[in-house]
Length: 245
Ligand code: APR
Image 1 (cartoon, rainbow, N blue to C red):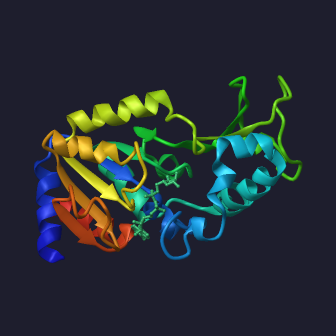
Image 2 (cartoon, rainbow, N blue to C red):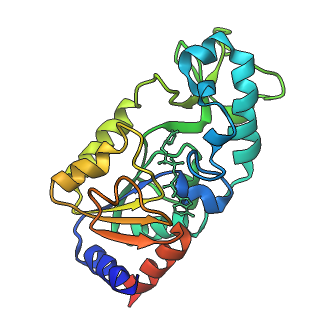
Image 3 (cartoon, rainbow, N blue to C red):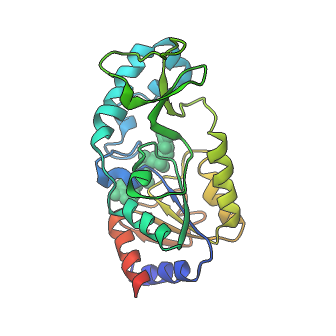
């Protein structure tokens, strides 16, 4: 990987507009399991709990699993060295933004400022009348949580299957795809759309794609220019060191 690592560091050093695109894999070392692959969440839980029509027809059954996965389990997670490295690169003016599929808020907690959350964020709850609340204000032992304004059932403010992408995050993500000359893709299978279109759009616009993943993905065989095999925190640490040389 050393030659590839040197190539990646050179691309970032020469870049005018580097953007990161992250998936569940960047949070694995924070203790949050990925959705797919070995020990993936979808091998343990039925994805239907995140189907919008199922949620509204079975709010209690859906909320019990959602609470277990996204609030009890995720709640303790902290940013790891990969999240912190991206925040440091933004601080140095090297990284312009992070487009993330993750809903765990770890990029923001790591100090990243320009974070576009393509699938929303589990920190907030929202009702059908678009009233928003911090999830931490509710006792999630008492399910399903109800809107204090209209008594409608509250759902996490991340997108369920069947829901549209948050408009601002969508626009900002594809704006970044237009401007970027380097995309660092970290921890994503490239299987989920329309998110996976963002790095593809950047590639089509001439950006160079650096990919960090322990395994090859759909991106690797199609758009990736430099594949860095490994865990997000290990590889990002090496990139940070290389950029300081
Ligand atoms: N460092 C980097 N990548 C890792 C690590 C690690 N330590 N561990 C696993 N990975 C990689 C896996 O090899 C895989 O490619 O992270 C990826 C995780 O795949 P998914 O869980 O499918 O994540 P992602 O591609 O982001 O899924 C997209 O699917 O269910 C929806 O909304 C959900 O945002 C999610 C979307």
